[in-house]
Image 1 (cartoon, one colour):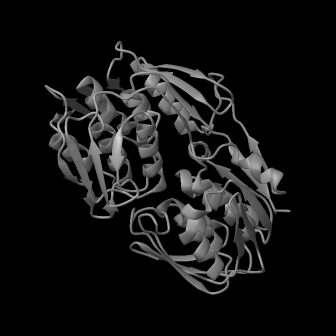
Image 2 (image 1 turned 180 degrees about the vertical axis):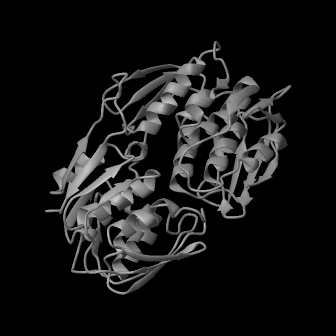
Length: 413
C-alpha cells in the first residue's frame, strides 16, 4: 500500500502501520523519489506524491527488501517511466521477478535490464491485457500486487489469471478500491480490473498481521504457556490453527480474540507450506522450532522457497535433531533444548530462533536481529509482557550509529 500510494492523485492516509524496519525503508524510498511524507499519530502515515516525482528507485534502499520492486507498477502506470534497482531482501533462495516484467510488458511497457536496474517506459497509457501469474511454486504475491496496482490506471480491462489469493492482496485491492479503482475477484485466482483515469485521496486502516499473530501463538505453545491475542485475524489463520489444534494445542477464536493454550507437550506434525489458504512459507521456520520439542517425528516440506532452511543449523546448536533432504526436513522431537549463541540469517529464521531460545534451558544469545526488526514491531517487548525473559543489547558503531546488536534470552517464565 505504501508503494501503491505512488499511483494516487491526492493524499493517502494509512492507519495502524507497524513500526518495522521495512516500513521505514519503504518510506525512505518514497521520500528519495519526491513523495511528501509525515507522521500522524504513532501508527499512521500521511503521504502525497506530486508531479515533481523523480521515478528512480535506487539500489541502496531497494536492495534492503524485496518489496521495493512494488514501486515499478505504480510508477509506470502514472508516470509512464521507472528506473528501479533489482530487489533484495531475505536470503531464502532464488526469487526472480520475471512474472512482474512479463506482465508489465503485456500492459504495454518497454523493459530492459541494465547494470542491475530495471528500466521501464511506456510511450502511452498502459493498456489492459490478460496476464498469467502462475510460477513454478504457485502464484506470485508481490507480482500480483505490482500488476494489480499498474492495471488500475491502464486503459480498458485487465484480467489476472493465477493471481495470489493472500489476505494482503485482498487488502491492497480494498485500499485501491477505496481510492476509486474498479476491481473484482480479489481473493480468488482470477482478478478483473477495469482501468480508471486516476485514483483519488484515500484513508485506509492496515489490518492485523497474521504472521505475527501466529508467531506469538507459537511462542505460548513452545513454552507450555497461554496467550490471548486481541484482534488476531483468525479467519486468515485457519490452516495454522487447524495444524496446532491437531498437534494438541487448545485453541478458541472469537470475533475479537484468539486464545491459545498448551495442554502439555505437543505431538509431531506433518507440515507442508503452500500458497494461501495453506500453511504460509513465512511460518515454516517458527513451526519447525515448535516441532523440535514435540513428541515424535515431524516432517516439514517447503514448496515455495526450497532453500529456506538456514535456521536448521542454528536450531541444531540448541540440541534440536533435524535431518534435511532437499526441500524436506525431518525433525525428531527432543524433551528440551539447551541455550547457545545463535545467528539470525533472515527475518523468519530470526523469529524461529527467538521462539526456540525461549524454550531452551539456560541462556541463548541471538545476533543478526536487524532481520527480525524488518517484520516484527518490538517483538522482545511483547514477549516480556507475556513473562518471557528477554532483552536487547544494542551495539554502537565507531561512527556512533546503532549497530546490529543482539537479543539475550534466558529460560522462559
